[in-house]
Image (tube, rainbow, N blue to C red; front, side):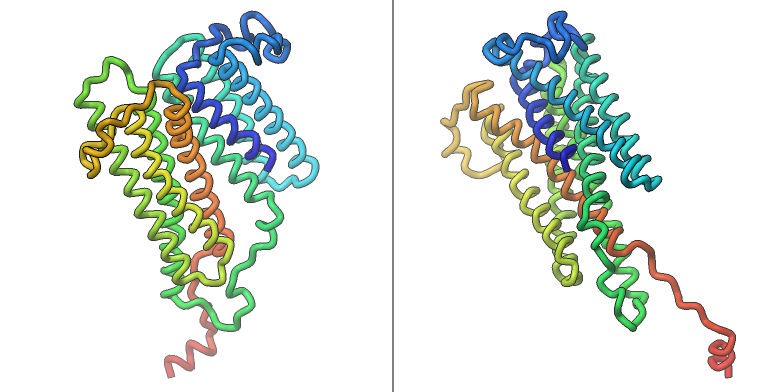
Length: 331
């Protein structure tokens, strides 16, 4: 839980760094103006320029997340040495190291491509952190198959329904991550990109957004209609639906705050005079909130997929037919 709670603010601050164009406020790395990261004068950091405050704070938060990832790996090794948990914790630690190196390389080389990769890899690490929190939590160990105590066997139709539910949950998380990748491409768009290519990227981003919305609503509907005993899964899918609906609204607000009211939507006459100052507090919060909510949707959809596989750990298998039963059937 601590890793998740430390990583989500890091995503927020990282979004603020990009929105405020503060990524180059500190020209060196891993030092800060020649100082050790943790020895940089706090007066200059807290009371200096706002972009320096954001960038240096982002680095400190990143270092904190790395320390928490190390602590989590050590605790798993000593307290819960299950092989899959150790592997997942090692992957998370390696991922946070890679993310830090990507951030440093972005500063040193000032490349847009590195900024895109850095922006895509952060949500991936957050997804790993959420997966670790879910699997190591107490509620995970207490989750049981709803029909475990039932005397009747699972029917083939039920098995196909469960398999379809698993596929839908996984594909929802995959599309949620794909949408983040597309958003990162738009967010770090090159100044040399033509207006036509930018419009294509935005249209594709909007299209995938509605694909994610459709998947989440379908997943929520299936869970609430057919899985009435899975209260935890029902709650998670409902939260996912609310987040995606809110994210669509934030997407419209983000486009409006950065450019103008979308021409394809009604109400253009009413919002024609709307003017939001570039890099103002309102614009910054809207845009950064849109970025952070995307990572939160990925976390919730990943949790839903994990819960599906926890509740239903294996596919339906036809019951074994003994020789006596088979002879009776033939007779």
